[in-house]
Length: 172
Image (cartoon, rainbow, N blue to C red; front, side, top):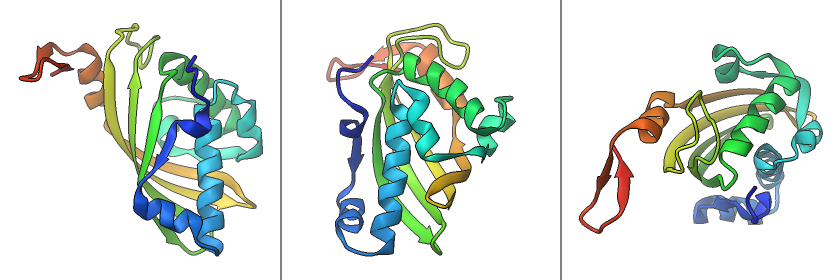
């Protein structure tokens, strides 16, 4: 488990921070999105009850065979949070569609400390980009479409490790 609380593992780009610090509906919506991300990376998945509808649709997880709804999300996140206890999220960009949809480009960084995507713990650091389109109803996530390159994550966790010119180890 990370010694750093979830709220300290979420970083905002300057442009996103400006939206959050402004008054208005977009700031309020962005605050809800950030609370959802904090609950997502919290080892105690009970917090998801406050930010996700019981029947939430998570299209990318459903395509991977994860059961529908909040309980399916909790099941996935329990494994993901244990495997990546130091997961850090940068919210790089956001855009809004009406008062119920937010799109966000996220950059995730983590160290694999446990089994993830069927791959035993490697101790490797990895990075991946996520594009999320989220629909909220009554302040809670009701539907999410996330684009993630799962094969790239698997390559980073299982591919050969190379040493860079600066002496840093990276996976192929």
